[in-house]
Length: 404
Image (cartoon, rainbow, N blue to C red; front, side, top):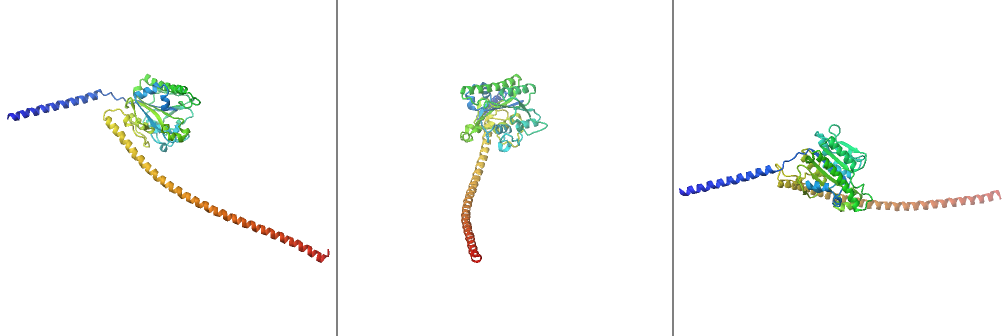
């Protein structure tokens, strides 16, 4: 009996210890949840595309505003699109689709899919896109009538003038989405060989970005704004062979900050088509079904229902699925390449046969021409001989019968 009592006491003590440990774990978990910063709601979205802005130029200049954004959010490099031009790049950024899908490949092309601003405007949120006059902004948006993205074009191709218009709209109309296309540094850097002069121009662009951020802070909406700043290498299309060999020529700098994003993170390279789906997820918006970009799960901040491990696993899964598709496409392209090669060889053989036939015909034509020439010569000689015979006969008969 004593042994049973001792065992009972030990079991009771063990159970009490387990309950205490569980209570401590639950308490620590609740404390962790309580200490987790409150997730803010995205009330505004700002997209800025800077023509000519590259990571190399950012690093060579003094850019406190861009660096500050990177420190407060995520920084990465994004693979651009082919063909390499500003129109295709911006359309892919806003639609989350490749040029083969959205259809804008050159100036004058019109978009075939709904962009993220289109989706925002269609859901009752105001969307504005600002660019210098004469650019392609009006071709970027498909939705017309109710819920249309308003395009505002400024008359001067100048960074400060474009930002003036953006600041005015932020202050007066407070649209949910503002897209800004800055002339950037490409135009201004023409003929400037000095690195200091180039850095000075990049600094000026950074100051204009700072004006936008200052306006958001002054309006008290900076903490509720999702900001995306990226750049396009305006010189990429000048020598496609060199740029394609050097993959850095197709990489664009990207800085993202705002509610739901991690802070102070440098991510591996992504695709420019990944920005729109990630923004749509954070803003609680549906994405265009034509979009083939991926959500940047590894850029998201952990929160209710999400752990960092799960986010990374989702990103790895998406990339794995994308890799499988790419392998399939590569296999298909290899097969098509083999078919094209066989067809090319067949055409080459047909070409050789045609060339041989042409050569044979040329020889036959040459022989016929020679034969015709010979016959014409014989005919001419015959005519001359006959003519001479007629003359001789005429002279002979005249002397014989006319006696003179």
